[in-house]
Length: 259
Image (tube, rainbow, N blue to C red):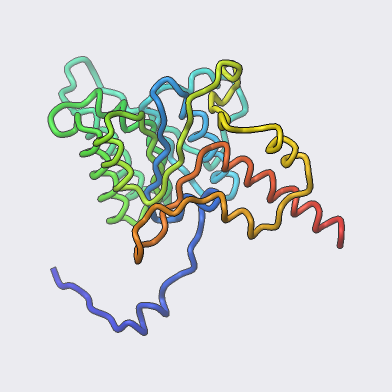
């Protein structure tokens, strides 16, 4: 292989502006991780993100390995830019590894279509149905990140929280994280299944109804967890994402009214 060496002037002249696919968390051509306890429905949030991106004009392939989207049957949750793939064995005698079916499908989509954005739901389910090294969630995450880097893809990975070492391994491989909290008892019937922050107070409830804060204040929602000299990782909860979107929408409406 002949490696290319280019001048720094040319390199920085070709660097493109950062494009965010969702909020200020998931950047284009990176791997994002949405994770939480197994009992919490993370698929609803992942599907919401996929639909938002599809409505914005991008083609998205949703790998439905978790098979948790059946409750949406007959609904209008789909979009023409959102494609679904459910890994299936050809027969009872099929000796293919489940994880390999997923990677073959992703590679086929890259070769034969213009799709470059993928949602993997979920890496925990894929590992559970696989054997050998593919039975390791951390190993599958590494394979996904390697494929994402090679193809300059955008990948959102859904995962169940496991041991601390596994969680740390997944977080270290992802460029950004979206944390899903334990649902409160009063929120069990909620369609999304995502919980609100337990520390939410009456003061925060009132602030939601008040005038939106300046956009500069939204940066306070992000927590920098990388060491000095490293790009800041964005870690947000679903609650924070939705609060940010509501504030942005309110501010835009206010600005339009003033004009």
